[in-house]
Image 1 (spheres, rainbow, N blue to C red):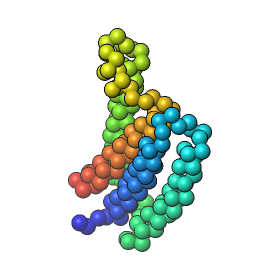
Image 2: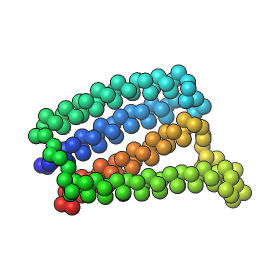
Image 3: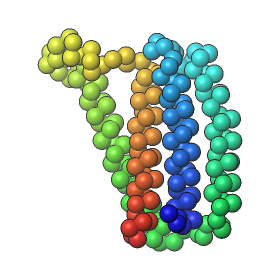
Image 4: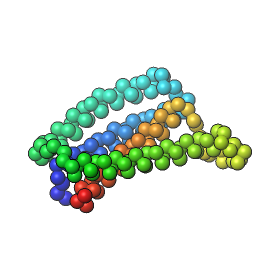
Amino acid sequence: MDLSNRERSILGHLVFEVGITIYYLWHAFRLPAETLLSSKQWVGLVVSIIPIAIFGGILTGAIVSITKSKLPAADERDLGIEGKAMGLAYRVMVAAIVLYVGMLGLGYGILPDLLNVMDKQAIVFAITPLSVLNTMIAIMLVAETVKYISQLWFYRRGY
């Protein structure tokens, strides 16, 4: 598969961002549900990810820039593709947040009598600040992945 400079850059950023986010989520979901955001475990996780993210970002940028020539300045086509991809990612993110907030609302107060106790426990598992943060990070991961994949698709289709 022959990739253009833009496609190679997009693919490199996609792999890096998905990798670092999955690494964070893998370790964050292994923390106890009642972990506070100011606890040593969570702060240690965040501090351990910072150098990995910095080094990984530099390495990804170096690999992308070494493999092909320098990226030309973005033209109208590139800006249009990025705008379409951002719009699609934004819609996916808004829909996921609305679904998540709706799930919380069903469990905690919009129509609490609509669900019996077992269904409510299945919908609202452990709502803690850490679980909400991790869910929002997962939603942003999905939106970013949609953005990068749609950008690659638009470039392949020739938009």
